[in-house]
Image 1 (tube, rainbow, N blue to C red):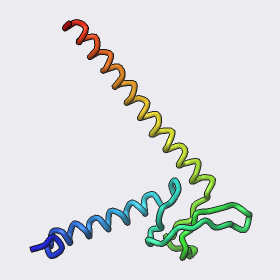
Image 2 (tube, rainbow, N blue to C red; image 1 turned 180 degrees about the horizontal axis):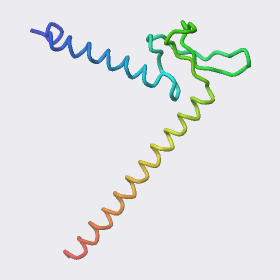
Image 3 (tube, rainbow, N blue to C red; image 1 turned 90 degrees about the vertical axis):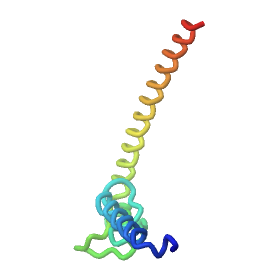
Length: 110
């Protein structure tokens, strides 16, 4: 029996599709969108006022399609990257402190 015929495998694939869809719903208007909640492709469009937006290719007003201001999306993305950078720096400092502690222990053991 192959993995494809296993009902558990099919069930897990369905759960994965649902989780991917929920991720798209939750983050539809946060950072730079990767796909619409309707799993449509995202393009950059210009509004009447001349501002750029990330928009679902099949955008319809009143639906759950994605439409997000480019400037706001880039600012949110930058904020996320800064947060991730701060986290990485704190981990690096912690590891450097632990290395110094280990070197001191090694010196004592010599």
